[in-house]
Amino acid sequence: MAIDFERVKQEIVSAGKDVGAKAKEVSSVAKIKLDIRAKEDFLEKQYAALGRAYYSAHKDEDVPEETVFAIIREAEEELERLKDELLTLQGAVICPSCGLKQTDDSSYCKNCGASLRG
Image 1 (spheres, rainbow, N blue to C red):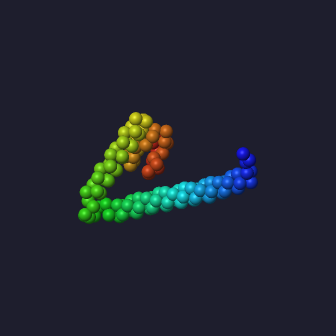
Image 2 (cartoon, rainbow, N blue to C red):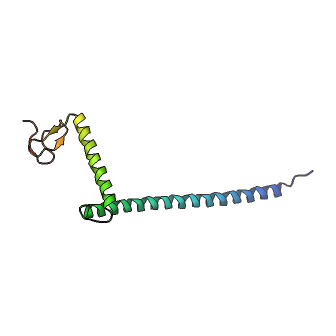
């Protein structure tokens, strides 16, 4: 039984081309998927920025979204409470001039500039 090396060579070359084409196709699909994800992330950031701007512009108005605004206000208040609690745990001092609480390593108030070292 004789082996037709020329035929084997052609089949290997053909298979190699097929694999190369498939790899290029897979690579192209992966790149497009990454581009789509990047664009979706970009749009989500834009929506978030728009939402923040809208909320800031209308948070004190009587709007149909009042329920959502109330939830956001509550979350903001809780966040401020947690920040205040953290500052207290870190040994924060209260500005005698404006009442801002800040870390005790500050010499001057970050809000009004008053001396924190009496």
